[in-house]
Length: 214
Image 1 (cartoon, one colour):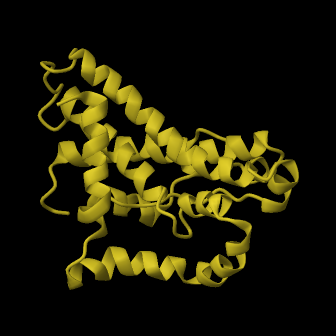
Image 2: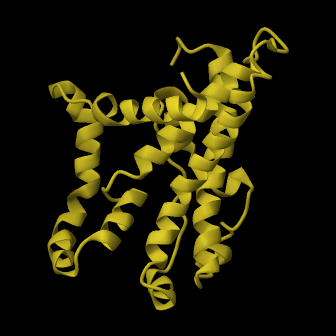
């Protein structure tokens, strides 16, 4: 934490304000459009970052690269009454919002207009540095949230895609999902397996190359 430069910390703060807010707003907006007014009743149908940010999750993102926001409350029964795919669409909307933000950053980077613009001050990031940070962080949030483990968005997508006969088996596994996720992220590197190095980082790098070239 102490080794991080001020420009990188500022980039992280601005990025999380935008990335987390749009991610959670996308969940809230999609759920509302699909018949569930729970997010609106809880004040989450908003682009105000204070409605969505979690203090510890924000600090984790700034200083470790991974974090979380407050989950948007939804009523699965209202969503399922609307459509069998509504819960999955609500889940996937958050990662898609992050992907959309990454694409916007990539478009600007591809034009090259920010390549030679210096930082406004000694403690501020250059526009190119910020946009690269913004792009990589949003791609990371998208990929991380698509992992098919609860409480991540990817779990609801997996449930939608699973054959009906597998639902009961998955229901028995689901309570252990958060513990497995914590094990992979925290204990895995201690025993020689890094989920980040093995899966997440290569996917981020691959998508970044596609979006910005090189």
